[in-house]
Length: 271
Length: 78
Ligand SMILES: [Zn+2]
Figure (cartoon, rainbow over the protein chains, first blue to last red):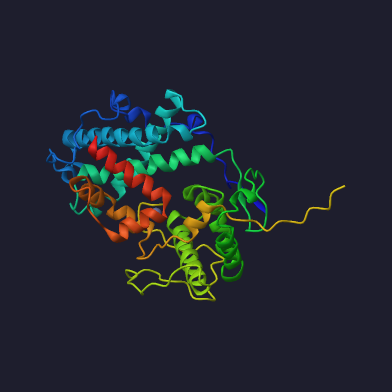
């Protein structure tokens, strides 16, 4: 069993320098969740955001200021939702995480500005960057001092606190799933599945420790589930069902697939 | 005097079994989920009965994307 640690440990969020502090619009961090701000889904966009953000002069500065306020609002909304996961949910810590996430989300958004196609309101599109960044940051802070066990199925948890016998109900299916995991999954697939679905390690945290991405781990997980469902169906534990379209995705992994290395390319905003 | 304990075969907890066997087809990647999240959230706010099979399936299988999509929907409703 291996404990995964970060290659380059980052300091706790509150001690990290807040590079965007000077750019914070006055009062932006104090915007409470639910405060009226442009971006209500039922209101028209009051400005052409893309043009303004590409522009220059006072209009550009104003667009940046308003965009940052939106990012702070969405980040604050997200951190508030997840505050119980924070080791230190004090207002000061929360504000630092919010501002840091807003800054990083704004940078990510501006780098993708030309990919905005107007299929949603610009403000909704902007919110999702801040929500992703804030949620990822909260999970990182939550786990920054915790080891991630990179363990195989039959290696015990370091801090096991549940008694296997308490799961007597459904133990037959459980044993069948465990047996299938040993037989049809690669060691890498088993370890990913154990970390994410048994030990409850957040996918962003595991991706960070393994030097891969959320998307790559989800792809591995998808293959794990497809393989297990095929196996459990063959063994009579799951009902058969008609074949269905897989939407052009990766489909089931072949029987000899070896995902010993994390595959993927990073194409979206998801890390 | 007790007999030496035999190593017990680990039994997966029911919630782990449930999520390990979750059907995540049709396939949608986390990257595609992020790209579609804004339009999905607006459609869901406009019509709570809105169905997007690929998105709904991904969100059932990906806890992180699910949290973020639900958060965006809540924010739009605020
Ligand atoms: Zn996802």
